[in-house]
Image (cartoon, rainbow over all chains, first blue to last red):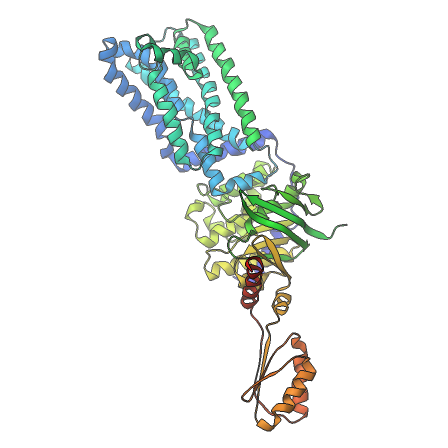
Length: 268
Length: 315
């Protein structure tokens, strides 16, 4: 192919291009959401942790602990499912944080920074796709739960409220990893950090066992953290016994959301 | 109206204790390829990152097309585009998806974004690779999609940070052609490179940077001349003419001439005078068997310039 031809073609694509209006916040956010969705399309394996893992966790813990803790698996499932729902979703909240870290290290974030966009849309877009991930994981777990014999007292309303609570909480919680994604050196270190926080906190919370049975010093902690409020409140919602606590929890979530947004803006 | 594309004054930037840019001055006219040449760690990338508003300088100021990069960053961003040294497209997306995403982020509605992406892929001869993931692209294709992504909205100034590092000669030539086409179309291209040949071939003007300082600036010919290394060698036939030849050369070229055997040699500051000196030798019937005027390569000029500046700092 001749260079002359190339020249004309190249010059044609750069001449007479009118600059479009800058995209709105929503347009930019949607563009980043579709980026995350396209990535799922190209690498469907990344959905294992919201499809296969929840199934494994739920089956494993139900049948492993059920007999020992509550006498029967079905009995234990009533207690376990709301908690393990939160646990599974919390474990995938670091997704966007690691992705952001990747973008910054590889250099594409530099390009985003020179675009005429509302910069947080880079994050909000992919965090919204995370909400889809969370929903898939929860749908799978609740359906499987029903098959295994989970019968929530709260009915449809209670379960829906529980799901919404977890979604809002996880959306807020993922900002922690997103913030770390800006600060930390590699995606591995974010994984490590999140494991270090999530794992112990999950096990000493009331996901698996009633905190009443824990030694005193551990019980105190479970009253003080958002994470535990949320564990508690999703369970409560599912059983429809105390709705006010759930709104309380939502309030504190949006508080932490605001806080993290501010931190994020300052950092950027 | 300001005719400069970029004006940099007293630019200072430190990372920790290390001073990466040390009172850098640059004046870059519009519509040319401007090369920032320097060894690794000279401060080229830092300069480009500051010019493209990605980094804030510690001191000094930068005006891009008349806009201050700190006060009017968004005005600057509308007019420039950067292709960094590292990935500036998403490797996990196809070429088409990348361009469509970026076009939408620049404000194109979905349909126009697709049209524009296809147009660019075609111009960069990437139609066949449109639906392949970028991580499976060859080095040359990778560079082309990077550059295509930078010109979705044609910028007035395009920054290319080491655009040909790691490319094979063929892909490198392709990138050079692309750059030449842009400049013909009126874009100002700022190019960093550590390859002298690249600067020599492409850049209309070159700034040689070392240790965060500007140590020389000009066209590649001016840089070669400024080193004053051009060396004239003339070998004559008969020994009796030696002294006369020496006198003629010294007179015509106003320089000192050394004699070694039958060869006269001299450092020439103004190569254009050599022709008349040769003419005079012919007039006097002095026969020449060999003649050479060694123009310094940009390599020699560069080594000379950078070693001077190192000597200046350390000595």
